[in-house]
Amino acid sequence: MNKYYFIFLIWLLPAYFLFQGSYQLLIFQGMTTTYDNGSSYVADVIDFDVKQIAAQTNGYVVLQFDTEDDGTIVEQLALPVQMAQVIMNSELIPVRYNSSSFSPIVMMPVYELQKNVVRVNLGVTSFGLIVTFLVALWATRFARNKIKHGEEELEFERTDTDES
Image 1 (cartoon, rainbow, N blue to C red):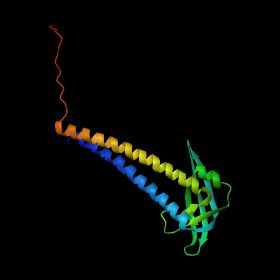
Image 2 (image 1 turned 45 degrees about the vertical axis):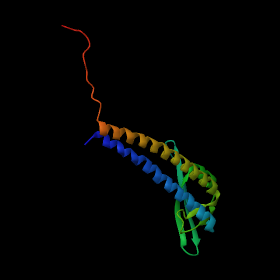
Image 3 (image 1 turned 60 degrees about the vertical axis):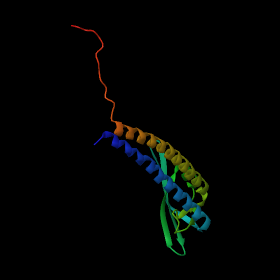
């Protein structure tokens, strides 16, 4: 098998960015649906932790609230440090809940910040998709050319007049 066939694996990168972009779009639509159509509740903060590992800081919050339809909901939500700072000292957090949404719980104090984070993620993912798509097109053209015409064979010819 020709080694240039492996270059076609670069198409996994645009596929990955397409998957990530779709996921971010689903999160954005789910948040918006929950915010617009969800029921309002006040959630108790059961547990809250912020961890710093090397240069990354993130954490989680465990929320508990009672609903009419689904009973008691206990959910652990991941938090980037920006969102954790907003709710750090809160014992009660207003939330919107929609069980049929892709993102069923939205914390009201961090909703706008979360929307902005998802928008930035969508922008970065879109940029990555465009760049990797263009690179994959170039690499495909290169690989097809090498497979069709083969590698250029180099012929070495001695040009000095060494007669010893």
